[in-house]
Structures are given as structure tokens and as C-alpha cells.
Image (cartoon, rainbow, N blue to C red; front, side):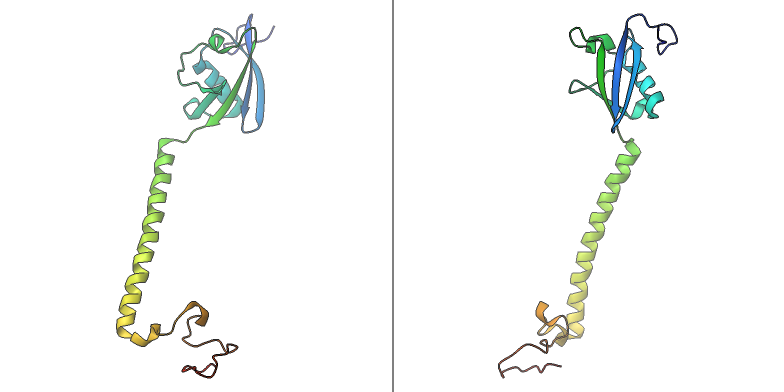
Length: 157
């Protein structure tokens, strides 16, 4: 006879096969326990507290902790397959949301700064942007190996 979660001998137990990110754990639990007791047992095996557990059985998330495990079994099957996933705390979710907002704000601020800088720089140095294109690489001159056909006003080199 095997020992159950509560310490008494399991007469009609349910075999539970749980998977958590590739780690598998098989154990037996009495059939009169509910999902909350299963979460406690999974917490012992995987080190994940029940508040952070998300259990999936037969394609459905087990949201109600008072559901009896016996009602989750299939026809004639004494085995229950559970997939365990970790959920984030509300503080972690909020921190991620704020980080995404902050990164978007900094990106917008950088775009604004570049436009303002270029505007004021063009006021004080109006000739610094004349003739600039991606091909001139910011020097204002044509590359030395380019052939301008004799009609170039800007000399290379």
C-alpha cells in the first residue's frame, strides 16, 4: 500500500503524471482530494508555490480549486495528466509593462531630440547639411573613386 498526501494509506488513489517545463513527476494521490491539495503536492515536487501555478488538464485550465480530482478522470482511467505552468506575479507584470512604456518613451524622446537638434543646427550652420546624402557618408564630398564626368562642383579628396 502506498502513502497518500495526507499520510494515510491510499485505498483508491489516482495516479498523477505532472509535467513542468520538461520535468516529469509521477505520484499517487487519494481520489477524494481537490485541486487545491494537488497544487500543494505539486509545489512540493517542483518548488512552485500554489499561487503561481496554472494547471492544465485535458486542454482546460483548472481555475476552481474546489473541484474534486475524481471528476477530472476519463472513463475507466485511474491516471490524471497535468501540465503545470508558472504564472507571473502582479508586480512582475506591472514592472514589465512599465519597462515597455519607458523604452517607448525613450525612443520617442530620441526621435524628437534628433529632429530638434537638426533644426537648430541647420539655423546656425546652414551649409552643413547641403549636399549630404547616404552616398557621401556625411562628409559633404563625393567619394574619391566616383566619376562625376567633369561637371562636378565639389572636388574629391
